Length: 281
Image: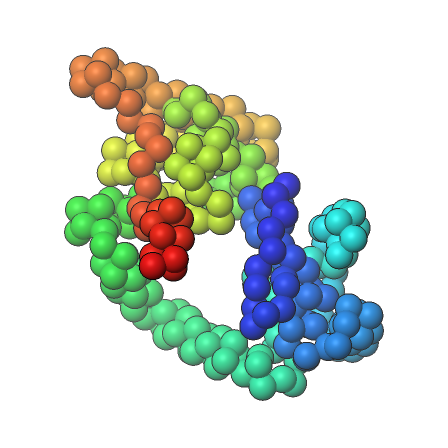
């Protein structure tokens, strides 16, 4: 797990990378939005808010995880942490002017999701526009979207065959990925210098194609063998990944170039030496 500090309007928000997601200290966020004078005040506010949410029947509080983050004394102490999705729900329950921009944004996103449910093409168009703004080529965008469709068909099969837990989806995905690439999802992210970013959004065209081949092969094998549950789908995942692995090795043998690379679409890092030099001048 990796601990980090995020600054929100001069307030310190503790966060850590856990189970392939960023988690944030709920007390810190509550304190920042309510202008709490100290941690104790923020903690009392969160205790009352969480009690009210429980009484309302909200499942949000049960989704908060007790994780160890660094306290002001430098020691690791357990505190309630939530994902970005959980935090947005908490923010909705806080009557604060600072929370208003988040609420407006959530209302906009919610409206867009309703539009997408009645017309799925709108969601596709938005995704395409977002990738264009990020500088992706039309060819890359098409491959990314084709790969996502292949992925969706695979996850639909997993759900139908009795795989329901989020962790199980991650396990199967990692089996496929490690089989065809030779490295885990986490190590591939590290190779590309990624933290919370989506790995597929930083794959090359070749990486996207081989990922799609691995997942397509996995689904076809699982369907043929009528795989049920985690264990049987894990076997199909390994076989599907090996199909893409063999294709990858053959291509690499012909080109002499590795398919799996550390290349990404992250913005270039600023040269800290140059920045310090400019400040001095």
